[in-house]
Every structure is written in C-alpha cells, then in structure tokens.
Image 1: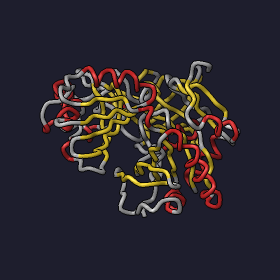
Image 2 (image 1 turned 90 degrees about the vertical axis):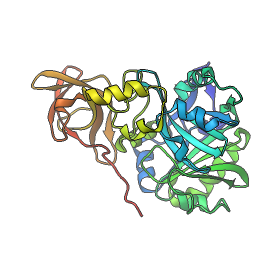
Image 3 (image 1 turned 45 degrees about the vertical axis):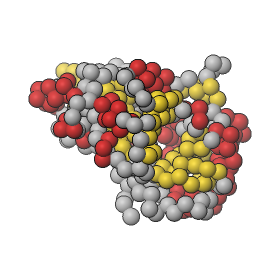
Image 4 (image 1 turned 135 degrees about the vertical axis):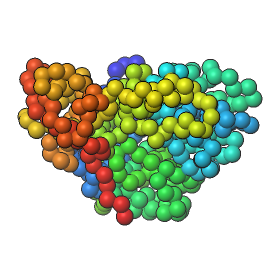
Length: 365
C-alpha cells in the first residue's frame, strides 16, 4: 500500500478507526465500525463517504458541447447549466471505456466525472481526440469529494449551508458554501438514497468532514467505507466498472439503453451500437437472489439444467434484505425474471432465482 495515494482525509479515517485498503491506486477506508452497520445507517439515517479518488476532466471553450457530444452516447445538448447527465465513454465497438457523469458548468464548459480506476486512461483518451481551440484538463487534484447519503442527508446539510437545497433536484447541482467553504453541491450519489456529493478544495475537505459529522451526530450520521458503498449500490442495481461494465459489454446488454441516443448524430461507437440493436443482445444483465445457502461472487458460473448460461459479476449478502443477492450476465433465452438457476459457489451448486433490477428502490417523498 506504500505507493497508493492518500486522500486529504487520510488522517481522519485513521482517527475514526477506518480499516484502510489500496483501491484504484488510493488508500481508502473499506469500513469503520462494520459494513452492515454502515450500510443500515445509510438506509435509515445517513452515511458520509470520502470519494475523493474519483477523477474530473474539464472541457472548456467554444465547441465544448460538440466535442463531448461526439465522445458520449447521451444527448449533451439536453443539458442546461446546473444539470448532470449519466453517460459513457465508449470504444468504436460500442463497449465501455468507462461510465461517467457529465456536468454542464456553463454554456461552453463541461466537466466529466470518471471512475478512479480509469481516471488516467480516460483523460489520455479524451485528450487524444481532436480538440482544437478547447481546453481539456485533468482537474482531479483540484477537488476533494464527499458523499452525504441517506434519508436524513438533506436535513443535516441544510444546517450547514445557506444554499436552498429543495430547488436542487436529482441530477442537478449548484455552487454555494458548506460550513463556510466554497463547494459544488450535487444531488447525486451511488447508494440508491437521496443525498448530495460535495466538490471541495482538498485543503478544506477536513473542515467540512468534521462539520458534517458534528451536525449529523444527532441524526445518526456515521462515516462509511467502500464496503458499504458496494453493498448499497448492488441493492440499488447500479453497475460498477470492472464488474458489470468493461471492454466486453455494451449499454444494450447492461440494460442501459436509455443512455444511447442514436438519433442525435454521430458519436464514438454509434455504428457498432446500431448494428448490435439490429442483431439483438445474446446476453442480459440480471439480478438474482440465492435461495440456498452461500454467497455467489464475481466469476461464479450460472447454470440452467446443468448447462452454463452466464457468469456472476457482483454478489454479496444484502443487509437490507438479509439474504444473498447479486448480478450476472445471463444468456438472453434464460434471462426472464423468475427463472430458476444454479450457481457454482466454489464447486457447490446453489439454487437461485433471477429477479428484476433494482432490488431496492427508495420511497419517493
């Protein structure tokens, strides 16, 4: 772990009892008090995550929209300043370099938020595309990023900012201050709960972290690590690059066809995606629930009547439902919800049933 980078909150993680691991080249807390306790805190109250390892790419200048429109399959022209879009960076064959968020910062300025494991290669790929007259900058070091998530997140944050939070609806953001620190307040997250992600100057992250934990103490706020982040996103049916998404998968297969706007004009991967739509997908991403004993993990084989029909991409014990759940790519002819399958868990056949995604969906107010 000696070569892994610390985030600006490294000392605070240690002081809070965080168990540190190397993740995507960073030293990150996997848990503090325990994954199950942290998971349940986010579902019932609130959790605070350090996600400063994520990468940010700034694209600015006349033609910024056209440039990002060409690189991504979603329709960037639909974004007004203050809005965010889930999208992707695709290869010419329609498979994933990465899944990303696109922030419309201004008319001629956008920011791409990319996964930590892909940050360097994403920037290299974006910067290698023709962009005369545009600034294309890796601004990852300019930001620390905190994620305040859970049903009490808004109430906690409201006491630390003068920025009106109600107008910041899901997948929108605003510039303001938190605990007196300039911040981008983004109503996004990766847990299936309501909440905000806060972009801050790295040297101010500790102050805001401390202020949030102090303000949230009476509301059940707890620091949460990568372990709970993973179980929460899996229950919410959110794909993770390197598991559900990679250079072998397309948005069609992953159930993310809503990000593909074939009628918007040309973009990287469009021809391959159009052809794939005509052919139909040979496999689909499915949820599954283990009915026997055991937890299916990434790489475990999915079978029907003894024949291999797919592979698990993610699997865990669900603290919310108190049973083993997961996601898997399954041959299209066997991918209907309710299908009974067996999963090879370390040489033992375990019964499971396919279920629609997501497993968990929060109640809307």
